[in-house]
Image 1 (cartoon, rainbow, N blue to C red):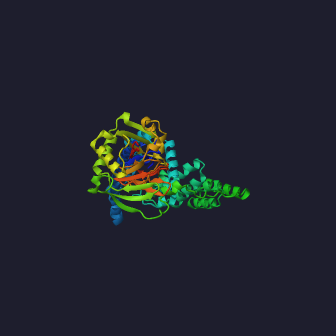
Image 2 (image 1 turned 30 degrees about the vertical axis):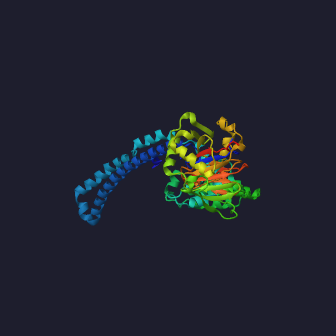
Image 3 (image 1 turned 90 degrees about the horizontal axis):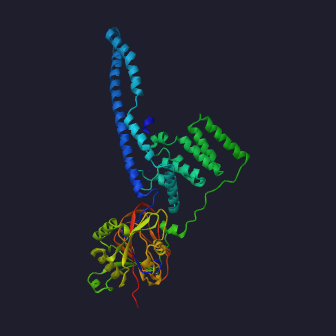
Length: 506
């Protein structure tokens, strides 16, 4: 079985949140996809190994049936069996020769080709540093959203995107222990120890991970670093599971003696102090005073008298309205296709994990039509000449408009005065998380194009939290700079299209 062995702040702007929000993982998407392909190869190799093993087991079982039949024949009529010299010969020959052959057969590798292939693939596996970074990111993300390790383990293994197995928690705890984050390590190790037997894969934990007594021992070590009396309980649990472990008994005795001789105050967990942004991203948004209203826009353009557009009045200061379902599926697919075909000279990077493409209003009739519709929604006459499609993959919050304002990649845009921006529009083309953007004298539109499964909310300080919904348009007017943030994404990817709408010349 030993062979059996993851700029812009003050301008009128339109931010079209087109493809949904994405998350920056420990490795980029290309590397993760490569790892998935490698995992498929490893699984097929293991399946080949299992098939060879099944063939061997089948042969052994068939032979056992034959041998057992002989024994049962002797049991049914011992006298006749023993009196037959042929039976004696077959038994002696079998014991003299077959068992030597069985020894050789049992010592033969089950599937040497599969073992050799595994040895060739092992150097391609993620290195220690990649795993360490991934562990830090998961711990940071759970802290940001206030997820408790016990809640993640309790999730359904197959159906929940927020599930971690007890073995996952164990190794995450070990990484935090190595980083000397003993508080975090104790939390993850405790959940691992208490839930080690609940997983349907628990039979593999001793083989691929660690025996349960070892999990309790490592929990005891972390608690001992925190001077907590519960470290004794952890060691006692470990000893109950492996009572003959001399090294474990010695370690537990030394720890107990040290605690009696030099007792110290326990180091307690820090009291959570979430920021306003933390609370908003968790959905803890203050109740908005007054009532949200739904109305029809039939006054901006004469055409709207015959085809009014429904909108929701979300907030008065800054004035923020939402147009649901105003970008159509065919238009969304067109924008997605335009982004995929973006030429190299039109691509840009705002920071690690946040890239985009500049596309002219005149790129196609579809973009011209979207631009005209945004003007009707906002009651404006002119937009900035370019759409900015931005794909983001961050596990930390960020402010998209601030990135544009501080970037040097848009010289023509940066020459404009921020006060020349009239408002902001956000068009959500898909997703579950929405956000309102507002910066001084700015008009922005975000169009959500991809569904965001978990996380990725758009937030503003005055209590606006919007979940991206495919086809929705969010418009924010105002002459003061307001912080607009996008929350970390746990699952899903995102693409936004940003458009700045400027004030008309006096």
